[in-house]
Length: 409
Image (cartoon, helix red, strand yellow):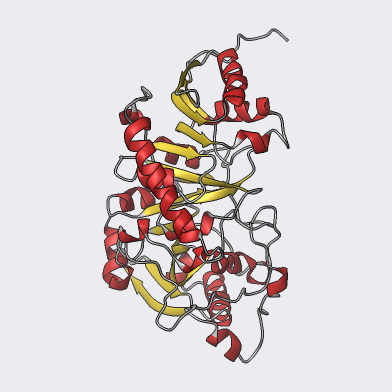
């Protein structure tokens, strides 16, 4: 907590929970940073690779803190461009300067223009040769990508922190003495970051469409129900957005929380398998829980809008496993996703993955056609789940503690 207060005191413009709402915590450990920030109205996506010895992401999810298994290796993270208000790294053991700086370039891709990168690691405050070589490489790299070093300071324990800010416009990119890293070929940019290789180039920043327009969302909590330039690809987008928000407000307040028999007081974390604009998560915003919004890779790319609203999420293909440990979510929600999935994979495989993710005693809430609900309910009953059909289109299932008997080898 002292560390968090030190950061805001060092740079008041961060303004936890008002200006800075959505954060990525790299190499998060047991996610204490994100846990402390929740009480300040900040939603932190904590991530780290699978650790055979400590399983820290599993522990973070058990604590009720948003977290996901991931690694900056050879492929892009499953997040859109320009969406995180801040990225944090404290002793995260990532070599940002490696491979020509590609790991840091990946952070640059997902950091919002004007957003901050907070780095607290030994190269920031130790002066041995190894750490200073890394620091000098980071100085050169951050300057080459036009990150401004805003603050370099030490807290009361003499732990150093450096805060960088991503530029708001492309002016600096075009004025560099050397075009390195080079600007990305805009024609070759990918809309959805799914199995996309890391790139050693700088994507151009989105230009405001009008004078005075900013790329930064309105302050939280107003941003939850505001629209942004990312919606303007479709001239009817604003209308669809507001209709979707109204639809989920009504459904959650009048059906989900009153008619379906779900014990919402026992739920801390939720996966929405087909989030669209994040309306389901927005309707639950006053509940003491958080939602991992997933946007299917074969549907509309609405994940930037979800982040603009101050919510979190990832791209995902539900024909594959989700990046989490078994039995780590309290509720799985899906709305009309199975029809498209059955064109590409077996519905049994999807149901088994849902069973893997959900903790015993957890719930599923599926909105589907009657024909698909019949197929889905048969699968879950075969796993000894309790299922109930409501209004012909809502399947509620509760996972029990049954498991298959051991089979002698």
